[in-house]
Length: 105
Ligand SMILES: Cc1cc2nc3c(=O)[nH]c(=O)nc-3n(C[C@H](O)[C@H](O)[C@H](O)COP(=O)(O)O)c2cc1C
Image (cartoon, rainbow, N blue to C red; front, side, top):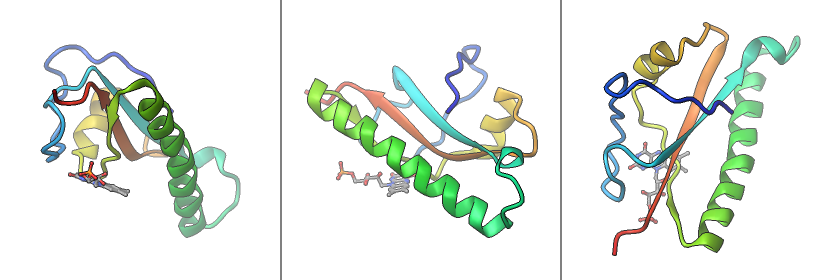
């Protein structure tokens, strides 16, 4: 998982989620490094990356729930723009993002 600070204006998330502000206080970006997954076939790499992301994301959900925070897993993000802003290589694949914020009062 990457934790990056993007320059303001570098990336405007296109998350299409009605529950969250456009720019959340924290946006977790789950990135799989496919080059480090050995000789596995590409389909299996995608399965492992998705399941691993789901496991981590669920823990974030549990933490947010215990702390009164709001979170949501998002797949419909502009991954190409985000990958460019983060300087990712072609073997580093964004799986999902997970903004964390404060619940609507
Ligand atoms: C893997 C995955 C990816 C998702 N991606 C999006 C997304 O890009 N945009 C979106 O609005 N909801 C997305 N959802 C649905 C939200 O995570 C969430 O379940 C939905 O907004 C309902 O939230 P609520 O139960 O708090 O109303 C995704 C769900 C999953 C499981």
